[in-house]
Length: 76
Image (cartoon, rainbow, N blue to C red; front, side):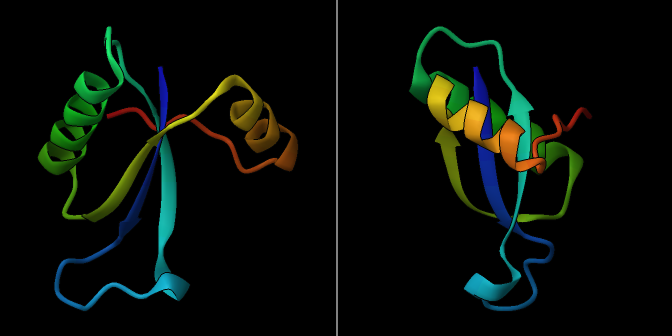
């Protein structure tokens, strides 16, 4: 399952929409909630990011992200 994670680079400042960034992770999970939990844990263990939202990408959404040219899986 591919998840899109919206985050701020630091936890020091208040989140602002203008500085929100995104990354994509491939998580091995049987349910969406399990994948969100695993994604959050993986990112918190490997970064100092302030996670705002984690979203499971549908096939259509994934195709759109690939077509748009911003899609790149992040590995830790």
